Amino acid sequence: MQNSTQNNRKKIGTADMAFIAIGAVLIAICSWISIPVVVPFTLQTFAVFILIMLLGGMKATVSVFIYILLGAVGLPVFAGFGAGIGVLFGKTGGYIIGFLFMGPIFTLITKLFGKKILVQIAALIAGLLVCYAFGTGWFMYIYLRDTGEVGLVTVLSWCVFPYIIPDAVKMAVAVLISRKFGGRIRRGA
Image 1: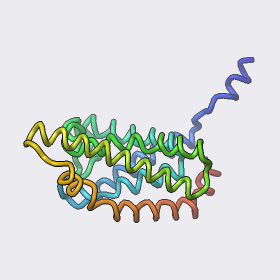
Image 2 (image 1 turned 90 degrees about the vertical axis):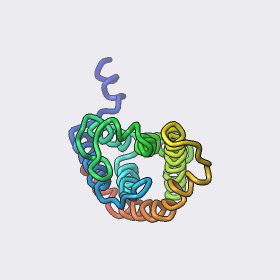
Image 3 (image 1 turned 90 degrees about the horizontal axis):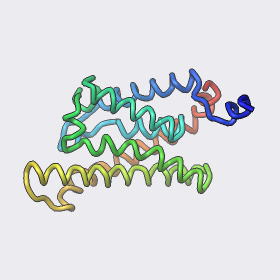
Image 4 (image 1 turned 60 degrees about the vertical axis):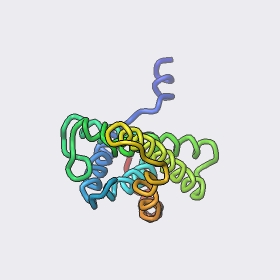
């Protein structure tokens, strides 16, 4: 009886743990590639997209969580080699926390509607929109608290509109890479 219960549970094997750890490192490396502006242009979203496509939404979420935890305890893994809980509670911290929603949203949508490529792309877009919404709400709250009143359109022009095309390109590249190499990586896991 106990053996069948163990077989029914999903186990995270050694290869999965290695891929999750590599995923957290990939996000950190991609965050260091940055152009500093109000919300830095980085390759973090690319890393999250590729991890979701290669590892699946939930394992990618664990990678994101580890990445955030590493930064929170002081390792310089955030954009501009930033670190500490202050980054997470700063104006752009909501976008970092927003990465946590992308994997579960991807998983939910692909479980409900299947794993066809168009469904996967729609799931990535939905996750990104939730990340944008969470990050923008967070940014507005912190900005209002620290600086003063600011309009939604102004914040969107600072924090979202300039990132739509770059994020679409990052998503397209992540989808292409995962379609080319995903099977090999999944077979290795």
